Image (cartoon, rainbow, N blue to C red; front, side):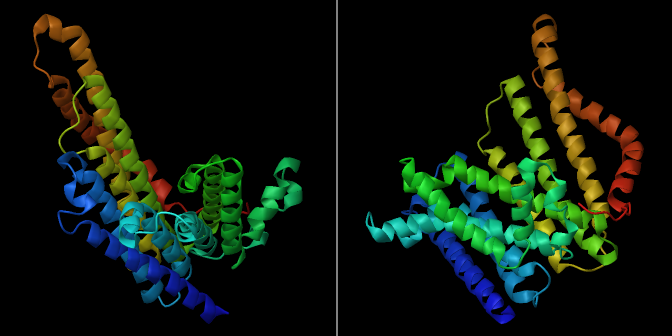
Length: 369
């Protein structure tokens, strides 16, 4: 059974990863291809999306072939390969060039939701194994939760098994396609169906709850592995904070988006950060302290995000109140915000580091969900 599972994981991941890499290389090839005619403003969108998908594919291959069955590695590999495959949708369509209609086209379009569902199943299975196994006994019994949540709690306990997440993925795709057909939706738009969003939310909730159990009880070397995943999550949240702050700054100042569209770059960097931290948690077991990196990421992301919001506020103040009277040059608010933020950061860094050290290094009290 174990050998069969390993073979299935490796086969699926290898096929998806090879298609991703070949499709992205073909898409970035000759100038006559669709992606060869992109405008300069969309280069960042195309380039970062392709980079994300290719790195996810390579990370999946490293996990599925180079970890020798390390706990949760194969499930994470399926998740990463599926993520990269869905991100490479346009390139995959251009590479495989399905027929215009008929059964072949239907199966081709239907396999994308299936790949995504398998990726979600991989994430659930990974969270139930990393860094230590989560068992049904570690969760609250269904009888102890409110009546309306008991069925969901039973389902959550069921998907902790080795086979259940994959079965649930296939069944969810069948239900999704059935709902999409009944409601008259287009097959290509099935992933946009509200039921698909419900599936994603349910899977995400299961992952978070599993990781919460592991975070509460984990100790020693397992905790170091868990902290690497937390570093990836911190990078994700830090980039999202910077993205929101940048959007606020642009909205307040009225500045035009530069030639390089920075929004997708920041967003994709956040995903790459999450990818890096999670893979490091599985692969790396050395002396480098993830807590130190996580603390640094929190400090820097908070500083940059605060600077962007402060710049937006000061720029609005100068534009609306002072510029008309004093003829101050544009951008003065931003420059002042950077200076004030740098000064405040140097003064407040010490008081910020103490609670962050406590957050990243405290040993929790073991408990159950």
